[in-house]
Length: 220
Image (cartoon, rainbow, N blue to C red; front, side, top):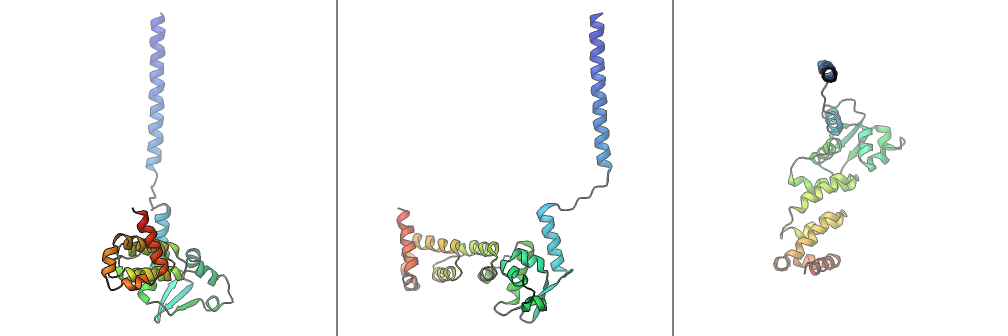
């Protein structure tokens, strides 16, 4: 009798397990039968949507004029990305606020377009000729991520022929990462730098020489 009861209890347990699994399958089938909406979620999707609005000129409310060409954009995006644009657009009595536009006279149209695309989507084209121009634009409009992005790209292009120019450019735009890369490059290539015609330009920069000597001494 005990064996019969024990066997019956096991059968009931097994039956309950089957019913539970059947319930789970029904639940899974229910949810999988629903219409699936699969947009690109998160930051990537948001960036794509905002970038699309810029590229197609949708619902724009501000204009940037460069070399007589107009770039249509959105005040809220400019203000969110650039502290300079934010200050400019926070005061409706300014010329930019009244006219709904700003004219940029110290930048090429191609550079301005790349800057705007970076503001909207966070990337730039792989054009080495634009790195310095975009870093200067990032410095002017306080786009720190653009500035740092270009600094790192420029650091990879340092050579004997341009190291003096890169040092001056880094100092002009307070580009810490680029300047450190210049210092390290000179410290690692002192003999070659001393033989180059730009050597006197480098030694005339006392702060740079001091930093190079500190870097060189730390490597021994």
